[in-house]
Amino acid sequence: MLLRSTLLRSSLCALLFSAAVPAQMLFEEYDPPSTLVVAEHEVTHARYPFVDVHNHQWSMPSDTLADTVAEMDALNMAVMVNLSGRGRGDDAHLAGCLSNAAQNAPSRFLVFTNISFEGIDDPDWGARTADQVEADVRAGAAGLKIYKNLGMSAADAAGFRIPTDDPRIDPVWERCGQLGVPVLIHTGDPAPFWQPWDDQNERWFELKERPNRKRDPSTEPSFEEVMAEQHRVFERHPGTTFISAHMGWMANDLARLGELLDRYPNVHTEIGAVLAELGRQPRTAAAWLTEYQDRVLFGKDSWTPSEYHVYFRVLETEDEYFDYYRKRHGHWKMYGMALPDTPLRKLYYGNALKLFPQIDRSLFPNDGVIE
Image (tube, rainbow, N blue to C red; front, side, top):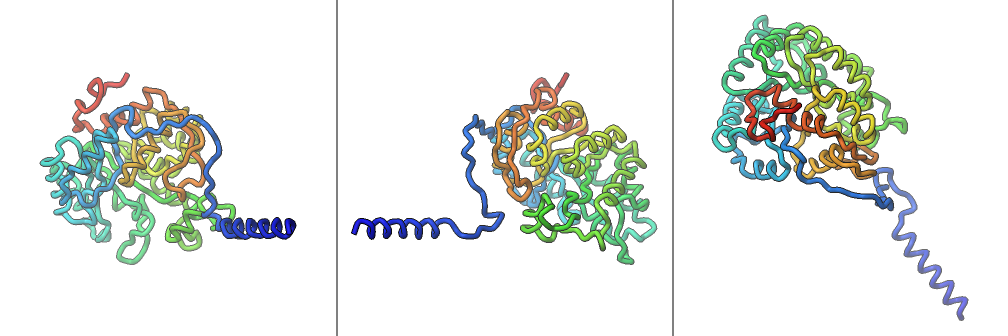
């Protein structure tokens, strides 16, 4: 009887265990909590006021901005740059953004303008578009944002892809240089998006969740070709200040990015949406950000306030082995780099003050002066 009862209990335990743990599990479902016991420092408020140079506020013309400003204050964000001033191309959208920011949140927002490549075949497109950018700057726009459709999906009337270094765009780059406003340019995608979607692809999980991000090298220009076009623009227009978005998709190869910045002194970069790359190489990243401390700006890209906390933790603490906020971007753990004070301040606000003289310096310690 005792043996029978013991066997019954064993069978029941086995049944319960098999019900709780599936015999098979999808790769993306495996996400065990770490048993590592180490110091943890959640950082919800940046050490210094900061400027986010890469954000998108699509509803800015109609938004009262009060809630957004309250969330910015909680993060210690002094200024947000809305790169989508023209929305999807509407002139009234830019006017609405500028007016709303001036009336309801003075000194807290900068707004960039945008251009359309429709009609690029017209002989006067370059001059006309450059004039539009100048008019927008005269109205209050702080710079020009180029979306990644240039060099990827934007096409001329014949259906041919418009390369980023298309000479028809040269008048626009030149005018921005003459006006003294920066061009924040997003070109391409991470290189693994062009690689085979297999067990050797580090972004496999992201490409499963977002299959439209896969690039076909047989029908689309390669990563190297797309990025080379951007770099030729930098070279042809040394009098124009460019901000290469997302660390030029080279945050996983900082030596190469450093060579780019060495070659083109008119180029800056920003860390939007590539924190996962920096957080897995904290010693290398901290040394690099210290070496290039005058060339890198803070950016985030999407507006989810709680996600900024991971940025602060990576930049400011020495914490080990913690989660990134979006699994598909970084299927690995983060480590804090404890960035030294001077490069941290330059990243947070000092470099932005140099590129945007219209920012109110009283929002920053010591009037924004950095040794």
